[in-house]
Image 1 (cartoon, rainbow, N blue to C red):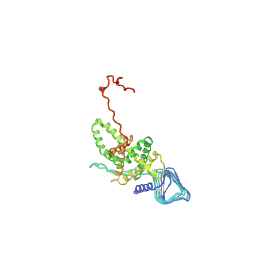
Image 2 (image 1 turned 60 degrees about the vertical axis):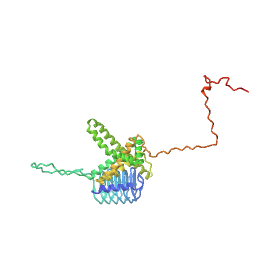
Image 3 (image 1 turned 180 degrees about the horizontal axis):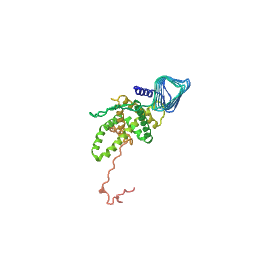
Image 4 (image 1 turned 90 degrees about the horizontal axis):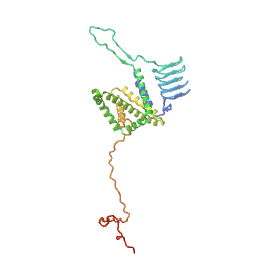
Length: 363
C-alpha cells in the first residue's frame, strides 16, 4: 500500500496524456471512460488498462482485460477475467460468480459486492481504517510531570479520498463559475495566454506585496474590515485565475480529442486535470512540489487583476512609434489660379455698394 498513491497517480497521468477521445473511445491499447457507459462483450479482449471516471462499465462473461482496472466514481460490473489489479476509489465494484481477478483488489471509499463464485488470487484490502493512530502512554508519573507524547500517523487511504474530494470540488466550482460568468472567465484566459510574462509578473508582485499590505491594514484596528475584504477578493481572484486556465486546458484537450465541448464541461474537465497534475505533484514531491502550483496560481491571479476581474479586455501597450505620413503631391499640368485681389475698402462707398456712376457703360 505504500506505493499505491504513487502508482495510481502515474498511471492516471499516463492514461490522460495518451491521445484518444473521451466517452469510451479507444486510447491506443488502454481504455479511459469519462462518464457514459462502456461494455466489453463476451469473448472480447482488452489488451491494456481500464480507467473509469464516473462511468458505468460492464465486463461480460468470458471477456478479458489484460491490465489493471481503476475506478474513480461510478460502477464496474464484472463477469469476466481481469489479469491485473483492481482498484476502486469511490463508486461500486460488482464481482459476479464468474468474475476472476488475477491480482490484488483494493477499495478506498468504494462499495464491494462480491458473489460466492468470484475468484481473487491476490490480497483483498477493503474499507478504511481509523484515520489516525495515537500512541499515548498508559502510565503517568506525577513526580516528574511531562506532557504526553502523541504519535500521529496519517492514513494513506484517507489522504487519497480527501485528495479526490478536493479535485472534484474544484471541478464543480469551475463548472458553476463558467456557467454564470463565462465572458469574464474567457477574458482572463485570453489575457493569460496573450501576455504570459506581464500577467505572470503582475501575479508574482501581488503575491509578494499583498501579505505586507494586509499586515499593515490589520495593524490599524480601524482597517481590519478592509483587510478582510481584501483577503476575500484575493481568494476570488485566485479561484477565477485557476478556472480560467482550466478552461483553456479543457479546450485544448477537446481539440486534441476532436470533440466539441460546452464551455462548462471544458472548464470542469480542464480544472480537474490541472488540479490533479499540480496538486498530485505537490503530494509526491513535498520539497519543491508546491512551486509549479504556486507559479500557475500567480499566473492566473495576474491575468485576473490585469483584466479587472474579467470585466474588460487587456491590451498591452505598444512600443511601436508611428512613422510620419508622407503626402505625395501630383502635378497634373494645370496652371494654378491667380489670386483674386482684395478690393480696397476706401474705394467702396460707405454702404459697401457700387454707385451708378461706377457701373460699366453699355455699348
